Image (cartoon, rainbow, N blue to C red; front, side):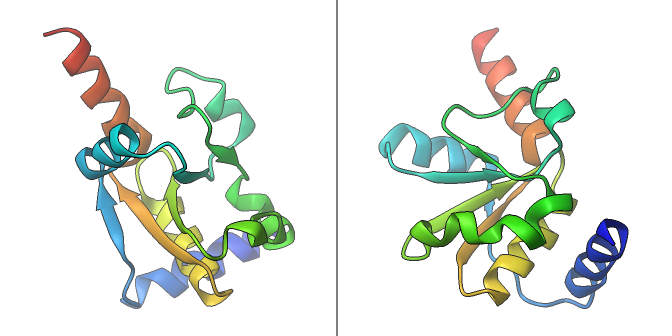
Length: 125
């Protein structure tokens, strides 16, 4: 069942439905300006505990569980939610799904790979 849900999300986003996005640089700017940003990380538990870690304060709901757990985000329906994954494929699909459920989301282009690379390059200058 989970495999079918992911396939449906992937197909849904592949047909060119307009999805709002944000770059990693824009996300970093938002994080530096505001403290109440809502970030949803849709990677697996193994991934968020791996090398790329997770952005502090982010909510983790793996895409495989999103169809059953999206109601956990209801308290954020009046806020913008930034959705992130490893690169951007799962976050784009998750963003499309959540927007259909009435949420206001943007997926992060480049995902945690780019976020990690930006932070790592800044810290080594």
